[in-house]
Image (spheres, rainbow, N blue to C red):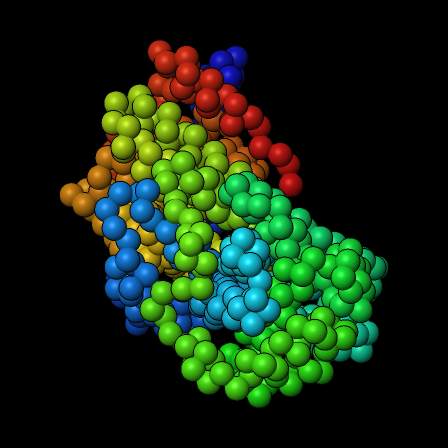
Length: 532
Ligand SMILES: [Fe+2]
Ligand SMILES: [Fe+2]
């Protein structure tokens, strides 16, 4: 059980006594709870929002009415799996510090190569999903990258893809530039020494990313060829890639296509066909299979194709006779898999989405919600923080108080969640629910400052589950609270800010409740958080 019956009176007393000082100080640094000063600017005119985030939001808004959404017909059995994954791949682009649509454009390039290679439909299907999900493991090394380089992980990831990192000199120059982005000369030297001492840093970072990506493909029920292509994403033809140093034909063909397609997309986006072709030629035989570079040469003059990369109107390219659909079970798997991507972003939130989901489902069961609401709540809870992938680990993992600019950045994440989910078939109807988890009944939450009249019962339950999970987990700036301490903190906000019925259900559940299933579910997920 997660209650502390022997310490109820003393703990409760201590927690209550501290609320006016210590807890309040803690709460001002805790984005899961703080919302005392509403910001009533619209998203697009908020000066603190960086250009990258503006671009993401504007792009996602533009895509809301695209054919990708219009093609979805009634009934989940008709939702194209490709369009669900493509929609969520925008979250992966954010994590990689790439412009929105990077994964989708990489998929088109890879599939155009597959067409030129005359790969059979089965192989092309495996390649198609490997291309879309190539960055599924990207969040697994974000925290370590940010800590090791002392830099914004989005920037480090973005710039690393534009250097020839398998060569010593460019890799060193990139490390120097990356750590040089912050701090004093002494701090930079210390950081470079740490990187050198780490020795196999690149290998470890790539290993985590590639293995996690492959795992997610397996979790989604995709074939081994898809998962193994993702695992081989950063292997190079000359054996100098990562993490396994595979060479030549040891690298699965689909992995070789992924490696070439992703680099071609990046250089094409930055400098057009000429730049893409130049980097492919320059790295042919080192990074890339020379035969694949020759195939790229055959489509180099296909102007219509290269122009089509700017087209946001759907993805295409999935073999037509093998179109995969996403039924309810598959949508649940996808929500679970992307919750894993979100939770892997920071060691401090490594089970946040998962735990919040279990908690809210227990509350919802106790409150008598119907099956459809439960299903929606489950998916919304799993995906509610997908927008956090847009936040640097320099902020998420910061041990000290956040600056106003950093806090503003954190407060943007529900909007990013909303914009991403709005455009994903099967999840679009959950966008408002998922994005409302930091809203409060008094209208002083964020991002839209909704009030009691606008916050539905499921939204209120999710808000309670989210804040309870956050308070009972370690954070870089405070230790996890006990269950009783967390309840005391939440109780102070009921009913002014948080919902009384949902809170009563939470208290009931934590006391054991009258539903053994509820208590059991809570017990399996709410063991003491790991100390990080
Ligand atoms: Fe959140
Ligand atoms: Fe959350």
